[in-house]
Image (cartoon, helix red, strand yellow):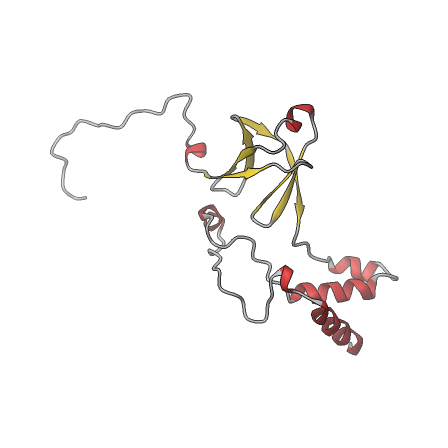
Length: 166
């Protein structure tokens, strides 16, 4: 680029007030709203606020905007839709194991099973994740880990046996 342009005329135009660069650079997908006002995106279930206006969205597709900084926004007909998240890949807190005398043993077993689980959320098709410092996830299985639905009774039995030995 050390070469001067042939013509000095600048063809760039300023942004219009109605243009938002954050919105332009979002990753967008559509998801269908279930009959109980939920939708699923990136292994997370989102619960949409139960209002009269949002009930009209049941069975319809809404847009999911994932911004480069990791924020997620739902929009229906250009209007933002409020929601809360339900995490399908929760982690047992170590403090809960220590604090709870009766459930401590059970929580230790649950934690042992969770350590066998593959906790990667997306399959690497959402480029915005890399802007938060995380490396892109690959679809290959992680050695020694299983996806949540592949965990079975044998995994729980192994966790119970290993927990009884401690």
